[in-house]
Length: 194
Image (cartoon, rainbow, N blue to C red; front, side):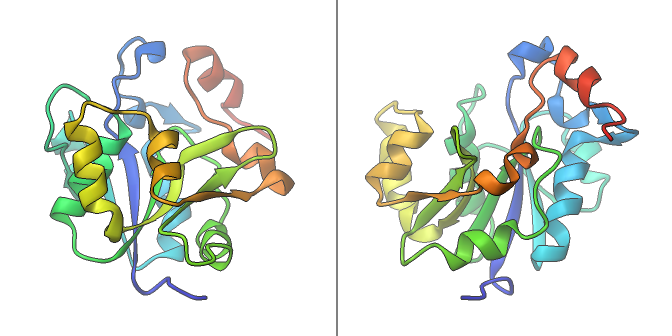
C-alpha cells in the first residue's frame, strides 16, 4: 500500500517542554539545526507536504516556509489537540504525526506504517520496549471521535488510539531511531552523535 501522495507530515512542536525548563523544544538546536527541522527533513522526502503544529514563536516557524498550525484549544492541551487542529485546518485524509523531539526518525517510517496498517484508522510506533503514540499515521475519519474525546476533558493519547481501533507497529529493529530529547542533559548527550 503506497499512500505517500496523500499523506501530510506533521511536526508536533506545541508542547510546554516542562523538563526543558519551558523552552520551546522545537527551536533548541541539535548539531546546529533546530530539533523540528531534523524531523521535517526526515519526513519531507517521504511525503508530499509537511506542516508544523506549534503554539508559540509562530513567526520563527513560519519563516521556514512551512505552514504552521496553532492549536484551536488554548493552554497547551497536549498532542491530541494539535492533531485535531491539523484535521480542522489542513486538507487531506492521512496524516503522519511526529514530535519535534524525535530527531532520528527513520527514512522509511511512512512506508512501514502504511504497509502494516491492515485497515486500521490509526497506527503508531512500538520500539520493542514502549509505545510512541505520537509517532502515528492517522486517518481523518477519527476527527469526530477525537473532538468528542477532547470535549469530554480526556487527553490520554494511547487510550484514544486504542478506542478508535488503532494498533502498534513493531520498529524494534531500529529502536535507537525513536530516542526523544526531553531534558538539557539528553540534548547535550546527543550533540555530535556518532
